[in-house]
Length: 400
Ligand code: GCO
Ligand code: MG
Image 1: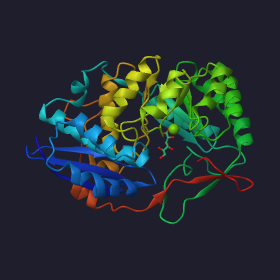
Image 2: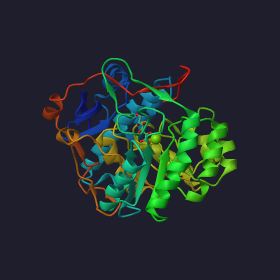
Image 3: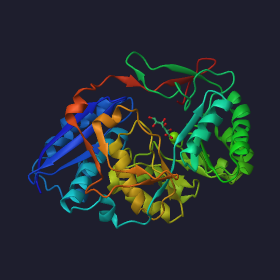
Image 4: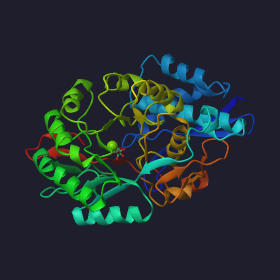
């Protein structure tokens, strides 16, 4: 099965997505996602100018060899742009291989380890009453877990709360105010109120989005320990993974990390030192199915579980591929299920479903089960957009 054509499709059905379509001489095509939120066009250029010319004429079945060729051959390894580009090729090739075998992708990975995947949608409120309403609505839909984020008294829009995390179209990135003290005073109280309202059996997750310092993170993890959260996510940046030791030593609250990791090397220390409980690497930003399998197997040695990043800024292609990975991976933990804007479904067709009982079902169609309608995609042209940025009250640039 020879690769005869490969092209990048950029569209914005509700938000920007970068999609790779690979065609073959067998009449089959495969689809991969290369979306890097806020820096989309850098991956488009990487693919178009440097990767796609090298693919034409290659054997589409040579998934591993093409991965190694793109990773080793570039000399400049790792990094979000490189790894998103390699991921798009890898996921499109796995899609093709599964279509050629007339099997759903999870069968090629080794078959199903489970029938359905526990998932967590997002619940957010400008204040506590609104957050509790949102959680109640999710529970009415059968959900058993939710990521809970709430506006912080005294601060304007913040990450994870409506209007606080959405991409800003064109112009300059929006700037938001951040205050570690305000967050530290509010977050434990907010989480305690939510636990009180939902009882012990509903799973609660919370994302600090790299916003606090190691010692505050250690204090937060300790203060919320009695609430038995499913996890606290991204308390502090992990460019220096050593900082997680302090947090780990302070409490038994479960920790999740790694949505911004691109390779197994980024994950190595936090896994090997047992500093986390869930690894958030996805088949988009961490080099495709080929590479997250390696991360998952490595994590399994320390009984660390997977939790693929499933934010709306990753296309339905990544979501579909993640569900096939989840269906197979022995050390599965949970799947983030943030959903997409309604227009997204006009462009991408997916065959997965929600079972009405807190779990997702991957489809049985050959491949990863997601395809793009290029005619519909053309109706939603790319618009430059940015994530917001954060500053402390004195003007200091902070982590968004
Ligand atoms: C999550 C993430 C996202 C990121 C987004 C950035 O846990 O889902 O933190 O919401 O902010 O993917 O592009
Ligand atoms: Mg996150």
